[in-house]
Length: 213
Image 1 (spheres, rainbow, N blue to C red):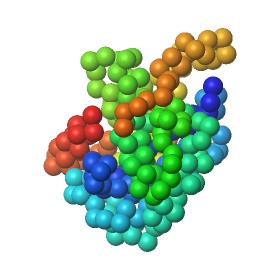
Image 2 (cartoon, rainbow, N blue to C red):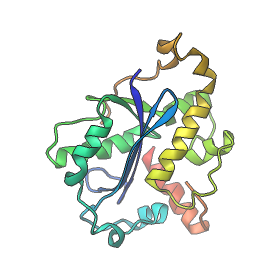
Image 3 (cartoon, rainbow, N blue to C red):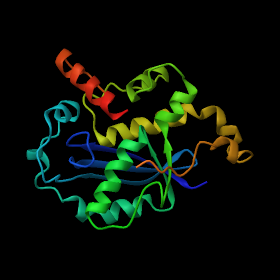
Image 4 (cartoon, rainbow, N blue to C red):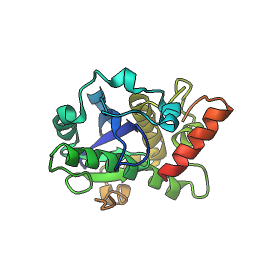
């Protein structure tokens, strides 16, 4: 099986048509172990950050205005993703934003066409139907320490997601070589285009996450 590239993004808002990426993280995992290959980059989104998004990740335009724009880092992201499987929690959100940014920057590269996609939110819903399956909820359910997750951040969330995925799929580990097709039956190309907060921030966070689903 291809190597897994775990990905998370933070954005200026929730609409990929009008909002932009301001942070991206990619971490490569092979045979359930990190390879040491990763990419973490803050990005100048060339626009202001919506108040609701800022309450979720705490990244202001002032913080990233001197970072490179997406077009300057697009090739590095593509190189990271090529030959692997794109893994994200609520993958349509992250891949939608990244595909829009690639298109805007003039790169003919599409996640879901040029690389396969694994949506860990979909996987979690299949494993835990009717339960909360946010990254926070999964960390709690699987006894993964998320105490350092005060606000959303692409790199930290990606590192937590790796632990969540490995914990969710640990029963399959013994079949890694004997039953690859069964183990990864949910892997296929797709075509579709969390934190310690006060009460107000928690409400804003819930509204923001609900809008992503």
